[in-house]
Image 1 (spheres, protein in one colour):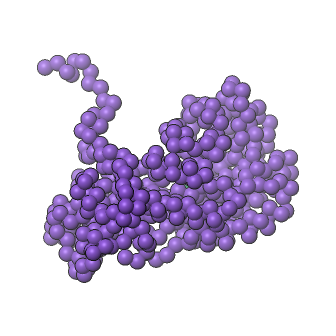
Image 2 (tube, rainbow, N blue to C red):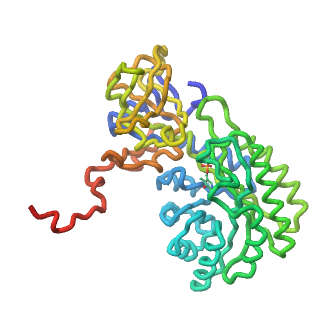
Image 3 (tube, rainbow, N blue to C red):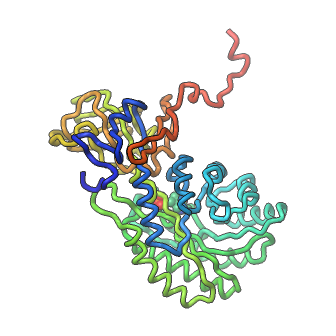
Length: 427
Ligand SMILES: *Cc1c(COP(=O)(O)O)cnc(C)c1O
């Protein structure tokens, strides 16, 4: 299995995550099932920490907000990038220190702002309206809040349009020509301390040059801020480094650092301040740590060879939403010859519920277990109960041991917070 590395391998034709057979996991815990390799997660974090020893690394919580996974990441020394009150709540619960949390978001409510101010996070401010509210709340709470503006650097990396976030037309960030005015305003605002500059140009970016371009933009702004007398504490380049979904290779954190750090050092020399580099990786920390296991319910020869499995876009939205490619394998037939071309579809009542199209695989039969690779980022965290489907369990593997880190939902979880008015309860 090229590109799977030592944490995911075949033993006698059966896929193992570290020392654990995935067939044993499905037998014990049922299907579908998300399975995460702690070993792979540790490798990914170490790669970042070694490549960027002086940077502040903020894990982007939206990629995967499982508490056990976030605890491992916070204990490794990472901070967190949160995008909502709920993510802030979860990040604090997982042990991330507020002074290492950046509260992001283009549409924060006053309640969310107050929660961040009370916790003592940094803020990435996305609009002047938000700046006004943040200032009012900070004064009311008697706090000084350190902020960056999220700037729109007007850069278009080659990625899917839905995950390209630094275009001129994007909803994110302060427009390039307004940036200086925004900081000028912020300097005057009570309770606000302009401390950094933030951008995030997109996700699943495999070419590093747009990051270099964005970093140069951040320094251009830093020079303007210094002229205003602002001490620039940090430059936050956001997240977005892509991973190797297709088995064609992808830049490592070391490759990323080799292109970014020389520019960072060279341009920092020319400043009076001594900014820290901040990065916000999500996908490149958690994406390739996790597989989604799903059982084959039916194989059908129709317009195509359809393999109908028990997981669909309710559990893995990426193929339907972004046309994303995930490698797949038959976990119980790892050493069989590939024979036929199959299209793997989920159980959801939508034609768009396709997980993998036209893949050459060994002969597939009812009862086989399909493994979908690289499902750790934007997998479970984007899941839903659509079609009345309960969310599946999540498992963490550490060597020969495994731990259920989220139980499968029950039918009562489908009822959730629903309330039936009295008159509808009567016969
Ligand atoms: C989504 C997001 C990230 C993480 O992006 P990845 O592609 O998962 O690394 C980082 N920063 C911000 C502001 C984001 O919105």
